[in-house]
Image (cartoon, rainbow, N blue to C red; front, side):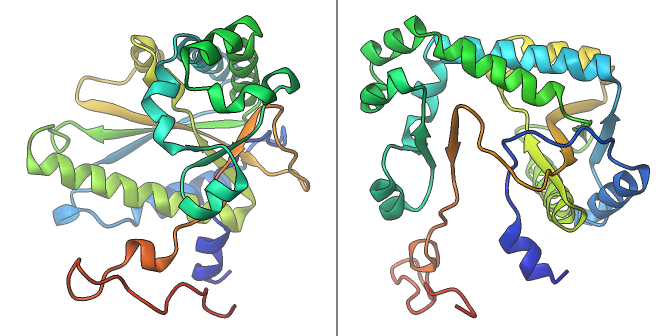
Length: 267
């Protein structure tokens, strides 16, 4: 597979995976790709924990689902991330960024534009939307054949120091290598973020995975083989749009936007 093809096809999988275990060969390929990422002075600050135990996955799924229900119920999620949500295809086409909030329970659709108001929050809670979202999230994580914990060496990851930036930058490169490799292997991947949003829940996962004091757990991802046809989850938002080059590339100085690059190459 050509690299540019993999980059263009790369995406987050927010639906279910096949139940099949991710083969050890494919696990090794993914982690080798991660280990080939660049890092400051070849420090290679990343560490990974591969999780296949069904009990551990079920526990992390429970924490993730409960966390999602909590932050959706108390309004902290929508308050924190409201700049990133779009409520129409026209808005998405204009902004070309963020998430399209276009699939909600039928009873809530007339009130889509009020999601970020107190009235909208009360309505969602009354209709049980946070519980529905949490249950869907728990089911997705629990059905994942493989979880991957990503850690950084605290000797490199020292918040407030330049080495911390270098280590996070390197971790991002390692994860992008993994992400692009999943495209070639027919594997889907998604960041499990909600335990980080709810106070105290991330620490539960840290203890569960036995993360030592000299490592910092930075992220957990779920992975699995993709089914032939992906159905959108019951409650979903999409993010297929990307900014045009003229919206994020400048020429010579930041006063001049790049022109002429908006049309995709070969199209």
